[in-house]
Amino acid sequence: MTNVAIIGCGAIYQNHANAIEKIEGVKLYAVCDIDEKAVEQAAKLYHCKSYTNYLDLIADPLVDAIHICTPHYLHNEMAIAAMHAGKDVLTEKPICIHPEDAKKMYETALETGTRLGVCFQNRYNETSQKAKQLLESGELGNIIGAKSMFTWQRDESYYNQADWRGTWSQEGGGVLINQSIHTLDLIQWLMGDIKSISANVATRKLYDIIEVEDTADAYIVFKNGAECIFFASNCHTSTSRVEVEIVTDKGLMHISDNELYWQPNGGARVSLLQADSATDAKACWGLGHETLIRDFYVKRTANEQFPIDGQEGAKAINMIDAIYRSSSIKRTIIL
Image (tube, rainbow, N blue to C red; front, side, top):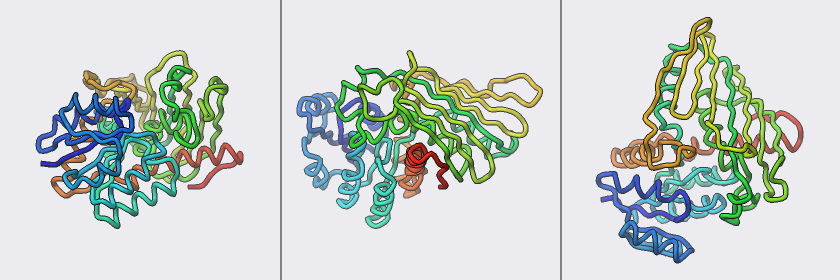
């Protein structure tokens, strides 16, 4: 039996807890949070042990793996401490705030022989998996370019729910690092390695509420010569579907949440997949949490590499860092 603990009992932890309970041979052993009321409620709900100090949890010899569901700025220190204690780690996105910390986390996993995984669950959506398979097969032709539109609604009430949100020091950014990071990760996963990024960020609507950006746009060039235009904003009046469009020399592929379409050059658009969207998770978080977490433990049991490890999980943070730097100096950043 693999004993798993979750650090952080906020908005996302139940996606992890519910998934863990469905995996044979894996048990939710403990939960941890500095909020005594929150952790007591979580422990009661899942019939497990509770901690209010993550260092005490990490020191428990019965814990085999730890899920980190805390505010962004805590991910690196908690993950590194857990790995030094011999625990495998699965952290929520982002892997951390700064690229240099992501590097330390990856190096710690190598040094300690532990596993480090990052939750980019949208890669596990059926539409994402199908798109990846088709693009890699060459069946749809060579990739030429892409377009991504991300328009959500995040208002003052959202940021008032937690004091770490909307801050550079604790959230590490705004719409890029908290919401559209999944879209950035999908773009590079589907399109390939990135050559350069030219971008702008701004706070257009929430400037009197948050320190960070609520809007960003970028022009991304890939090493294979493909290009992508990216737009993300939390200023919309509602939360719309995330749209990713990939252009090849044979046509156009369109991903819209749980729907995947293909339109060949000169032809009509056809549906390639309409996935089942029934889930306990919020649709805007993607539908793949359970599948990702199950795969993490399947790979762990089989002693195989989890596909979204520290190196892979750091790619989106490197993109975000390049976007911020490009906007700051008004120049293209070469990755």
